[in-house]
Structure formats: C-alpha cells, structure tokens
Length: 128
Image 1: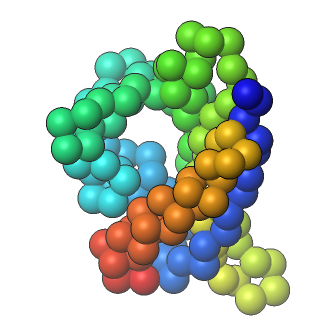
Image 2: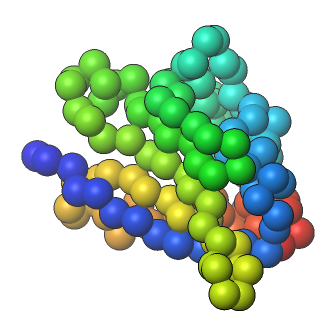
C-alpha cells in the first residue's frame, strides 16, 4: 500500500536557532523526540524504550529544516521521508514548526496524534 504525504503545523514560541537545534542535534532530539540518538556519519539511530529505528539525514539547512529518511523505507526503495521545517510568518513574525511525514491512509490520524504528543513535549522543553 502506498504511503500518503501529510503535513501538520504547530505554532512554537521560540527563536529559529533554538528550534533548529531541537530537531537537528542529538541532545536536542533526545529531549523530546526520542530517549537517545546515536549518529554515525549521516545515519541517526533513534532509541525509544529499548527499540531502535535508524534514519539517514538526507539534507538540512541551518535555521530552516532537516529532512530524514528511515533506512527501512530507503531499503524498500520508498522515497518517503520526514521533515522538520521552520516557518516564520512574514507579517507577524510568529514561528511555526511544520512537520511533513508519510503514512498509510488508515494510519495518518494516528501519525498526527503521535506528532502532536511529541511536539507538546518539545514545547514544554523549550518553555514555549
């Protein structure tokens, strides 16, 4: 079954630099996204309560975005990815975190709920 792309946007009361560090550094990610992160070259191994998932950092741009691809998807030839992107409103200057991810159609709601829980944790960590 083909995975569908979806995006969710979360307003985050934070500077671009602080937000970028939260999703692009091992210490930042370990505070809200996972329990621990190990990095070898461009491969990030995320650890959650004893289980591990590895993703390749496909591309990133300082204070803008970081894009990852799960190795399992890569091995299956999928072009799916998950991306953290910072969006700043030109008028209000408000900062938002835009997350792009892929899931099978019947799992999108579940995926969004998971991201909402993760981003709630991120906001607590940032005091946002």
